[in-house]
Image 1 (cartoon, rainbow over the protein chains, first blue to last red):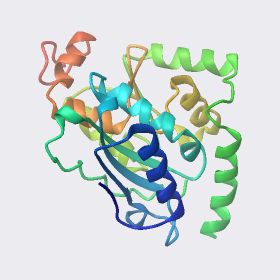
Image 2: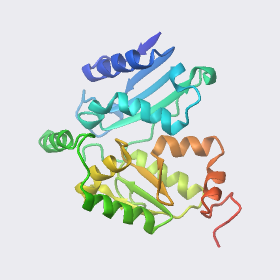
Image 3: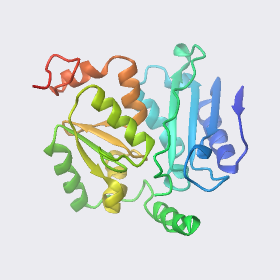
Image 4: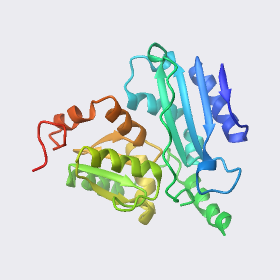
Amino acid sequence: MATVTTNGPIQALITTKLRQRFLPSHLTVVCESYMHNVPKGAEKHFNVQIVSEEFEGKSVIQRHRLVNECLAEELAGPVHALRIDAVPTSKWKGQEPAPSPACRGGGHL
Amino acid sequence: MLSARLIPVRIGQRFCSATAQLSSELKTKIDGIIKKDPVVVFMKGTQKEPMCGFSRNVKLVLDHHQVTFKDYNVLEDSELREGIKKYSDWPTIPQVYVKGEFVGGADILIQMHKDGEISDFFDGKQVPNKYGNQKLT
């Protein structure tokens, strides 16, 4: 039951990679580049919420590292910012991810 | 003009992939930086003028807890900007170090704050903070 809100190629790639790697019971990948100082249609800022058994018993830093590793190629290349809300299945109560910060104008830097 | 500026940045990032090695010179430099001050933040912009919302959020959390920190603006040092990512094996900026140890980025600092564990964390590291045992004098 993965949700995709818009359909850029990088967003689709991120969704596929996360789905294959973590077999999530819940996954949202939102491109938030429209909130930032980048050209229209750019795919540089993403907000990921992912729920998986893989995160059970792991600290927040370990969970982030797993997601970062999975998307290392994208983060080394086109992706500028990645918000991660990685939740173990047992802790999932349908909570909303935290809102992303407002742009400070440095997205192109 | 904007797209013209984007191109060299993106190419630069590809050259500096996570697998590339960190030079021993730069590693020594970063070792020194993170041990020099109890709390160090590598950020885009400065404490006074953060240039990125994530860097700003880290500053806001630390300010809220009255934790003083030393800032390093990676936008002024491209070697440090790529080097710090390899050093911590963490692909994004900002990065927070406490007593020489990598703690995390903006999401993690905010989560520690929301979970109410940040004060205990700083107490454990003997860093003065507003709601901790040891306050700023």
